[in-house]
Length: 86
Image (cartoon, helix red, strand yellow):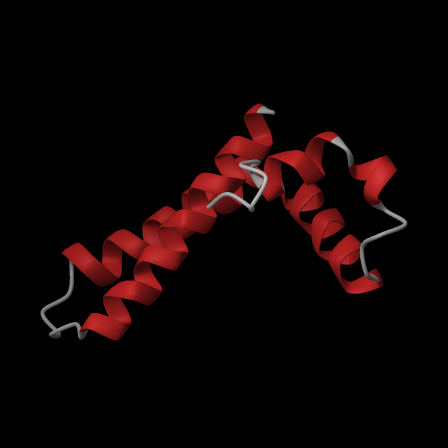
C-alpha cells in the first residue's frame, strides 16, 4: 500500500528511521524496534505461513470479510520483505 505521495510507508520509515523518530509515536518506534529485533524476513515468513494455512489448508468456509483480513496479513508480509531488502 502506498501513501498519497506514492511512497511505501514501511520502506520509507525503514530508510529514514532516524529522521522520522521525532514524528513517530513512542508505540510506533517500539513496534519498529521489535520488528528489527525479530528480523523482518522471519516475521514475513510467519505471516505467509498463517495466511497459507488459513486460506489453503482449511476446510472451514471463509467469508469475504475474512478474505480481506487475510489479504491484510499478506500485505503486511510483503511490506516486511520490502523493509528487509531496503
